[in-house]
Image 1 (cartoon, rainbow, N blue to C red):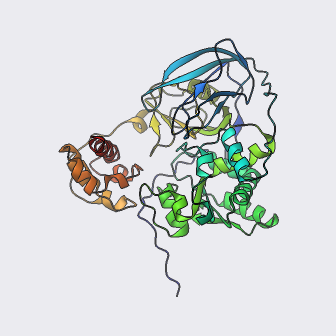
Image 2 (image 1 turned 60 degrees about the vertical axis):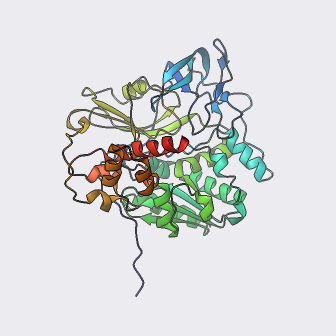
Image 3 (image 1 turned 135 degrees about the vertical axis):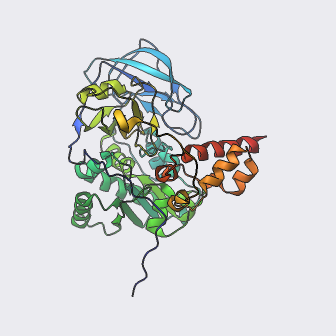
Length: 438
C-alpha cells in the first residue's frame, strides 16, 4: 500500500470564483495614466522623461542602477503632463509619471524580440523586459533567474494555484494564453539548464489542467508536468508550494534556489514567453474586478498606470457605495485609500465591497481554542505572538519564531474571537527587526 502524501496545515476558504467563466476583455485606453516608479521590491526607479516629453508604447520611462530593481515602461503613447508624488498602497510616497494619452498606441521604434546567445544575454533581456513576480511579490525576475548556485538547481515550479477567493485572472490566462505559458516554461528551462518543470494548479480548475496536459502532450514536452493541488489556502504561497510539489521544507529566509528550485508565478512565465516572441515589455496586466459593490464583475486587460476609478467605470461603475476597496485578494490584498490609485505590475485583482462584506467584525477575548495554531501551515503560535507583542517582548517573539510567519492571514480567518492575528504578527516581526537594528 502506498503511503499517503503528507500536507502542510491549511484552511478551506470561501470559493467566490464568480468570474471564472468571464473571458478577458481588453479595456479601452484611458485619457490619462499615472505610472508609479516603485513597482518592485527594491530601489524605486528614477524618471527618464520630463514634463512635455512625448512617449510611445514600450518606451523606458524609469530605471535605476540599483541591483534589486526593474525598469518601467510606458503603457501608452502620449505626452508627459507631470511627475507627481503619490501616496503608495503601502502608505509611503512614490514618484509617478502622469501621461495624457493620444489613443494612437504608437509603439516605440526600438521594440523587437531580444537576441539571446547565452544565459547572460537571457538574464539581461529579462531585466530589460521589466519583468517582476506578477503573483504579488514583485521581486525582479532577472535576479531570480540568476542564482549564485545555478549548477545545483534542476527544477522549475510554476505557480498557478490561485488560492485566493474571488481572483480568476490566472485561470483565464491558463485558458486564453496557454501557449505563452508553455513557451515561457520551455525557454526558462533551456536557458537555465533545468531538467524538470511542474505547473501547480488547484483542483478547482480542471479545464485549465486538461488543456495544458493536452498541449504539453501534443507538443512533446514530457519534461513539464501539471500537478493537481488541493483547493486549500494558502496553497499558492511560495514555501507551501515548494513543499507540496517537492516535499522539501523551506524556512523563512531560505531561497527556493537553495533547495534546487526556481519558482515563478504563471503570469510571469507567460509574459516571458510573450516578450521573447514580440519584444514588447511589461505594459499591461490582466486583473479580476469583482466584489459586492461592482456592477459588472469581469476579467480585464488594462494598461499599467490606469487609475482604479477608470477600471471600475469600465466594469459598469459602482452599484453600491464601496466601503472597502482591495488591491489583490481578501486574504493578503491591501486596502487602498482611494480609487485614484493606479494599477501596478503585481496587481492581479481589484475588489470593491459594500455592506456586510466590508465590515470589520468586532473583536472579542481569546478563548484559547487553538484554531489559529491548527490553521498555520508552519504550526506557529499566533496567540503567543500577540501576548509577546503586547508586552513589547522582542526577545520572546524571536524565540517563538515570529519571522517564520508569512502573513497569509489563515489565523485571523479562523479565529472565533475575530482577533487581527495576522496583522499583529506583522507588527511583531517589525518589532524584532527594530530591536535587532539597535
